[in-house]
Amino acid sequence: MPLTDVALRSAKPTDSIQKLSDGGRLQFWIMPNGSKLWRLAYRFDGKQKKLSIGRYPSVGLSEARAKREEAKSLLAMRRDPSIQKQTDKALAIEVQGQTFQKIASGVLAKKRNEGKASNAPSKPEPRHRLANAALGNQPISEKTAPEVLSVLRKVEGKGRLETAKRLRTTIGELFRFAIATARATNDPTFALRGALTAPTVKHRVAITEPKELGALLRAIKAFEGQPTTFAALKLMDILFPRPGELPLAEWHELDLANALWTIPASRAKMRREHRVPLPRQALVIPEGLKRYTGHGALVLPGLRTATRPISENTMNAALTRTGYSQDDITSHGFHAAASSLLNESGRSNPDAIERALVHQQADAVRRACARGEHWQERVTMGQWWADHLDALRDGAKVIPLNRG
Image 1 (tube, rainbow, N blue to C red):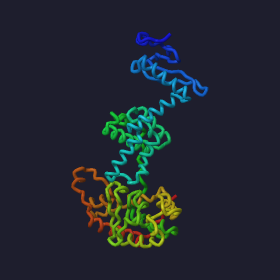
Image 2 (cartoon, one colour):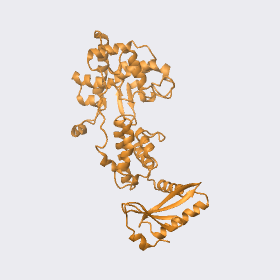
Image 3 (cartoon, rainbow, N blue to C red):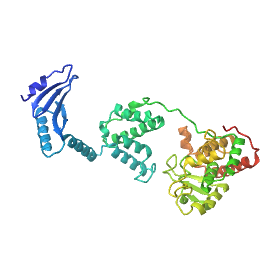
Image 4 (cartoon, rainbow, N blue to C red):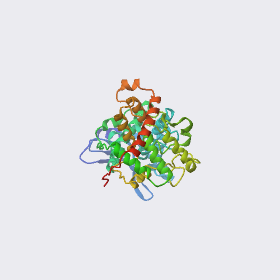
């Protein structure tokens, strides 16, 4: 017997699901929690399936019957109503621009305009790639905190605690951009603060004792390997750049006539152009490299191809060959060594040191007052540092180390 509006309104929940039939396989389900749902039972390719039509009373009796007839028309054309529903929903979301992928594209375009991201549109930032892989084609406005947490838990479950933490930040950034562009109403990641396991902070190993640093420099001087690897190690200790800056250096960034290396904003830590003075010891290294790598874009290409930069693993492996394990030093440890010893020397303005290290001032007032580059001080400091390294390498006695 066909259903009536009176029967639908008066239906009461019980301890189990009740299913009332309207005919033509259209069913009205009364759930134990009181929800009332429309379902259509049908067969497609020999399989019994169900199509969700909607929730009562948002979808009334007449609308449910109309959707039943639409489904029958699709079945007559050998089209699965459930697949068609998913396709229609995906198309609607895409048209409205409400997917995570669309939002991420908007965020990256904004960052590129601000000089805070790579200008290569085909290469999204790593965390945006991860967010797209997890949530890319899903509507951002429908996501809840538990659903986002489920995605983060999968990353966390692989032991990637820091990645999970940063991914939550990136997803939150996408939600906030969606709110600003009227494509979402809230940021569920705010409720997830403290929900993830906090990663243990692990400081990079570094040699900051002068005599031990001298011994390391002597070991590097005696290194026998690829010219690019040797040059990379030498430039790391003289210029103490941040991770990712030196391996990606290109020839056009070097102005050897003016002893200057300009790191573009897209690769610098603070996403603003960073200039590095080149002391005499650093200037001779690129000159020696030109015969090996001057024909390509990269100053320090990898061993297998000129189009990809030398890797951190290559530099760390070279340090291992000199007798130092990664428990002693890594290629990134030169930055920490310079930070420690330059401050201990007392020879340079602390603001000049912080600017050279591309550190963010903790004090907002001092940060506002120290926007200058302290260029001449940094030129003098850079030359002193290179000379000091020479003195440590050539003047100190060899100190035997227990390197395990």
